[in-house]
Amino acid sequence: MPLVFVSFACGLVFGIGLLISGMTDTGKVLGFLDIFGAWDATLAFVMAGAVAVTGLGFALARRRGAPVLAATNLWPTRRDLDAPLVIGATLFGIGWGLVGLCPGPALVNLAGLGLPVIVFVVAMAVGMLGYDAWSTRRTLTRQIEKA
Image (cartoon, rainbow, N blue to C red; front, side, top):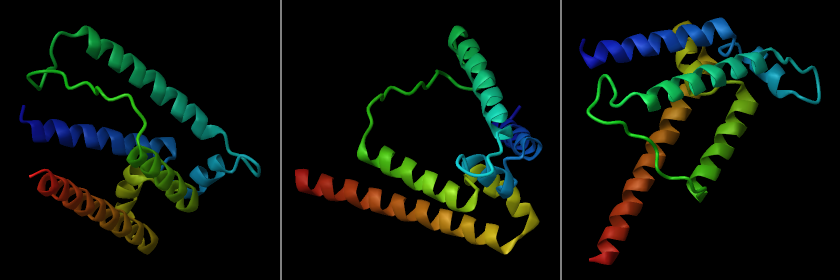
């Protein structure tokens, strides 16, 4: 089966899961994040379920010798906390708290063609492209300085 179909199927299952769980409902997400107000704890069960399924999936994948659709496993090797990770996580959290959307649910919500979601996704894409351009320029500058 071509990889594009597998990717599509995984994305479709993920999107349906986001819809069913309520992660695309910005009111529900903001209610979950409002721990000092009218807190809605239902998404905690969604997250607990996701962690359990992910943990089981990783345990099974680690037992398997090689992946099904790749030559080797590509497990992460870095374990340090650096500035880009902390800054990115902070910006992600601020954006999620202000709007009630993160990238996955925002892409699912694009189907509704609502202006706030379109603006969010465009701003997210500009931020990603901006970071990529900055990172590439920084890498090239370092390479030139070493030469």
